[in-house]
Image (cartoon, rainbow, N blue to C red; front, side, top):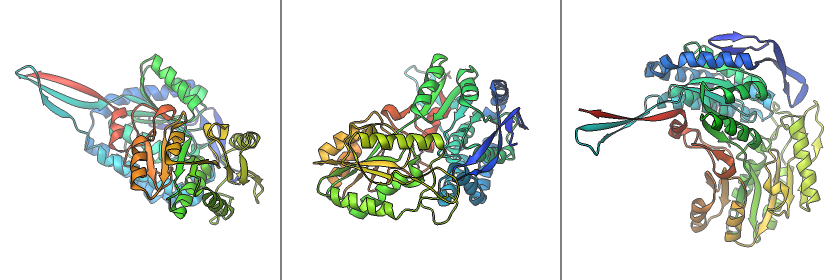
Length: 476
Ligand code: UN1
């Protein structure tokens, strides 16, 4: 059984949970320990005790440790990517790409350790000087989702450590393999005991303890809106810092003047790659009437050529859905879309393959309306709909007519419309002639409205969440 990592030691715990391969449910990847409330509190206590020395420790040593972690992840990206694809179901190139991204994130934040800066100002009062500095937030609780089993943990853990915080990390129950492998790498990087802790287990025990414990000064969460609201209410009550990344219903606008090939590629990659299981996935194609028939045909043709299958097979384009519950939710939305009167042009069928798994052909609805459930609610699967519109102005208004605001895309050759869209779409990230999903690791990530709360993740902007500002006045 793979153990939790608490206060510098692997501790087995009482119960173990099997990690199942969604491409082949007969394949059990391993048994992973399940922490309870008491073990979670042990991890918080260890992180609390380790904090003062770590916060004031050598920056060079910290940078070297993060760099070492990044190097090992990069050196082992094929093996880590294989494990990731086996437990989550994204294709092997996607899994390896994600592992590489995690390594690059650690390298990036190794550099950031030495780049944190402050300000020195004069005072309005003579003889006084003002310094503005950033200090670590404290013990940070990190709660991550199943769809990016190593990249999202990396983009929360690396900045947390880089800026001098100590960490209690709770990965999603469905993907403990990548989390454990990452923890094992971190355990050999030279960090003092208690600086980093891994507690695998259910949200109601581990997550809730992190939310409720006064010693956890900041909680960063990526996951569903329902859980995000629970994290928010709990941390708000005890005035802990909180950062939430939740759902999306990301629009991809396609104007009449778009390059058709560019638009189809952005649509298919953005909506269906990684089995559509990304909060940045495009699920609403908002398409101007002149290009609509050609766009819809070309997307359907491209989808027909995609192979859905075992994530580990080299000829697979789209892996399985992550588990039975998610598959049931996807099928439920497909039924809802039909009942509401959208036309299912292709896909949406459960598929049989050589091994038992959660296979679903990419579902493409056309002639949908923006008020249908499939256009309003996050499905988190390989399901997208096309909605015809008359003009750019109508497209923009529809793109913004959603409770979410994570990522938004436009395909156009008009500089005027691209520029206007970048300025006026209500989203944290805007993509012009490129898919709404698939982001860089060195620039801010996050959204607005119902998608995100708190300051941005990634890049140097991550410092905002993982540090707290101190203003010092000195009379000379
Ligand atoms: C990406 O699109 O490259 O959970 C990243 C998610 C996002 C990450 C998306 N937080 O899907």
